[in-house]
Image (cartoon, rainbow, N blue to C red; front, side):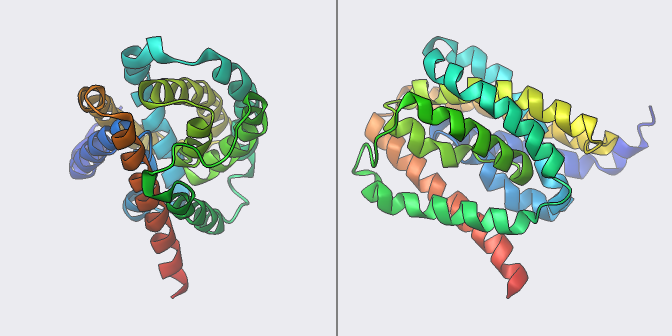
Amino acid sequence: MEFSFLFEDLGLLSILFFCGAIAFVISTIAGGGGALILVPALNGLLGVSNTAPVLNLGSFLGRPSRLFLFWSHINWRVVTYYTPAAMIGAALGAWFFSSIKIGWLQIFVGLFLVSTVIQYRFGKKAKSFQVELWYFIPLGLMISILGTLVGAMGPVLNPFYLNAGLDKEELIATKTANSFLMGISQLGSYTFFGLLTRDLWIYGIALGLGATLGNVIGKRFLSNMKSSTFRQWLILFMLISGLGLLYNQLKVFF
């Protein structure tokens, strides 16, 4: 393997590492949103067509450390309902990747995330609608398809986890287990359809190493945080993620 690529792009790799670290500190203390915040940045650094494979690879590589840190808090009932459909959806998403207009999907996701501020009355409400366990079957299918196309859909699931009664460590742990198992299908599908080149693997590894560091730092903050504060942070970063996606896509039209 030639190492000239690494030296030529050392600056970019360093940026990806630090972006991964910062994003996953945020993701840990706010129940997600860190990866989605990276979408506008990666769109600019790597191009829209490369964002989803790199982001999903980097996120996947960062998840083992988070699974280790939060293993005892996983709600396996939710995982059992969510994961099988999510793995199927991830494969379908990779199949659709080359023919779907990703920009419009990012606008739709952005609008939903911004609306959560109203749904939860700026964090004052613990729940906004009732969620049953079986909801996670269609959610697993739809969210994994969209996540494979867009690159990050974690914050979209947060209202459903909250309304199912999951909080703080349990939410983070269960969400990570679901995402890790779905990620196996995502990366396998990306590879099968030729969407992950050597360069994108290197970018994803740099992002994943940063994400691993971010998980460790974020865990320390989360352990001392109240549930109400956690919910407020979660809603704040859903709002920021949504606004970032909307700005990134709407500026193309204006």
